[in-house]
Amino acid sequence: MTRETVYLDYAATTPTDQRVVDAMLPFFTQRYGNPNSLYELGRDAHGALEQARAAVAASINASQPGEVIFTAGGTESDNAALIGLATARGRDRGHVIVSAFEHHAVLEPAHWLGKHGFEVTELQPRTDGVIHPEDLEAAMRDDTVLVSVMHGNNEIGSIQPIAALAEIAHARGALMHTDAAQTLGKVDLDVRALGVDAASFSGHKIYGPKGVGALYLKQRTPFAPYLMGGGQESKRRSGTQNVPGAVGFAEALRIMDEERPTEAPRLAALRDRLIEGMLGRLEHTSLNAAEASERLPNIANFIIKGVEGEAMLLHLDAQGFAVSTGSACSSGSLKASHVLLSIGCPQEFAHGSLRVSVGRHTTTEDIDRFIDALVPIVGRLRSMNPLYERMVGTEG
Image (tube, rainbow, N blue to C red; front, side):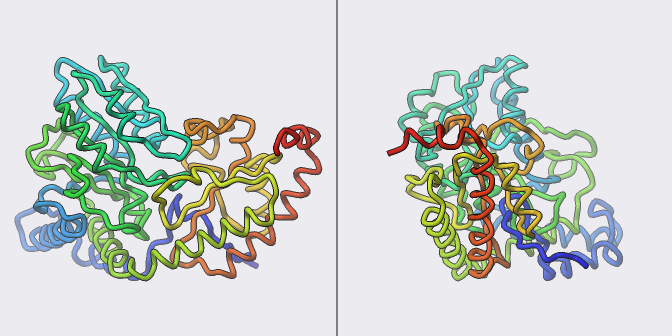
């Protein structure tokens, strides 16, 4: 008998919407042509690819469809942006700034740049989970070539003032990139209003397929291709395009845009119900980045003192609840979340983090059942921790 799972980890991935699957299916078995071929089957695939590109461009308010490059996912988009923008601008190398709580898909290529002649600054957010413009201003240098700050944080949900940060970067001659994988479809996203030169997106965060993403690249932005080969995507991303993936990405984004006016407030209400229930029923529990002025509607991250996040996760899994202790991409690591450490959370408490992210299929009953299940689990785990009383003894 298959146990029904209450899925509360939508920030990690989302189930592919059946409407998206239906849109993709013909391009696997009937309209399967290579979009770079000149015969009719290829022209048909090319037409579908360009229609998807135009739809994504319109959704994010790009100036033209050609500013959208389809990739194999958010990680490739981030890698391509960091390396492609920095190396195109920094032939004599230079200075790169990334926020300290970026996804590893940004931090790792930044570290790579650091090993290849660039100087890299990891800019710390404040305790509200926000990179403040004056802090970026202080970190800028005359040789800064690139700034990368994510739009919405994937662990704590804080939204960054990207337009203000981009203005500072551009005033000093630097390019601006943002990882917008978590905000696409969930908030109104206008790349021209944000003022960025590049932005990264991922299909599987918006009920689209895994293995497809997009990179917005503002026209005339200097860019060195990350993948080389046949020169597809206007020589900016070689490799035969994933036409079913691009079609699915565009359809998923269309649905997100169509449903957002009602879905975003619904998710925010679920998130707030979760926060109220968690803080009201679990003592010595706090919401991370609680002071953030803008938050994603679907993510809440808590510190539950006196327990290990992994233990909570496994006990919840045994009862049919899927949640996260942080970024799913690093869930196999025993290290405390670099995001929580960056906002000043002590390491011993950061190990007790729990990220809950709601989505399209979450109900109020799911939230209430989750809290009802979590409260006794926390109680049992705390009772087995000989250090619990000492950990919380210094509070109030």
